[in-house]
Amino acid sequence: MLRRIASALVLGVLVLLVIWFRGPLLDAVLALVLLLACFEFSKLNPGTDFRQLLSFLVPICLLFLGATLVSLLHPGTAIRLLPYMLAGLAAIVLPLTLVGGKDAWTLWTLVVSGTIYIASGTSAILLLLLQTRGPASGGHYGQLLFIVILAGVIACDTAAYFVGSWIGKHRFFPAISPAKSVEGAVAGFCFAVVLGVVLGVWRVHMFWPLAAILGGLVGAGAQAGDLAESSMKRIAGVKDSGSLIPGHGGILDRIDSLMVVAPLSACYLGLLGMIHQL
Image 1: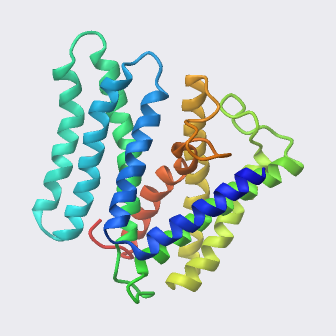
Image 2: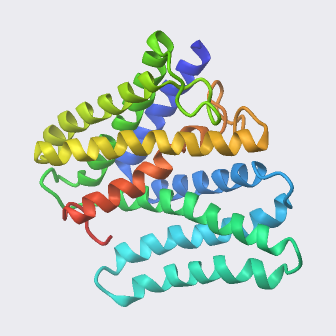
């Protein structure tokens, strides 16, 4: 437990430093996270050629991440759509045409699903962090938005774990994750909503009912992302996606919730007009 807490504190400080100062370091860190996530995702799929899956997944996901940068550099122009179109076509066409045979369909499914899962999550994180205009500006609007969302994810995970450990009696999706409870899930959702209201109103000046909806999306999305990754690990027959972070497992074990929450939040905030170049 002490190793887990120490790792979380060190990782938390590093993450806050990277997102607050942004710049090329942020792009490099997100690219590294994407590469590690692709590696772990590929390892979680038994019965497939690991290197073959990785060789398709990495460049296509990087292309999607680059497309997000292009969309921010060229707002309001058609050019920002081209990298997304190329990445989508690559994900659909390349596995089928270059591999062929009976394994092509399985590979295609994994490349497309992996691209949607990893690239959409990391691209949404980048999109949120690079926002500069907003009511809580000062050049840190994007960071504040992301911190509100990240804090909601952490609050949801923490509350679900402790409340579930203390009073959890009713199993929540036992076929996927037997340790989770309904009581923990409800507590996690409620804590995410409350923190979403507090931080949303205080830091980014949201109208409180809209902040509550954001908190609800974070609470629901965080648990959906956690369950999705738990299902992948159960299918693969492993406890963790990797061993990179002491006491926590792999990179996917730490970002599984964000892979769902970030795109959900970006879409919602885009509909509210709170982020640009969506």
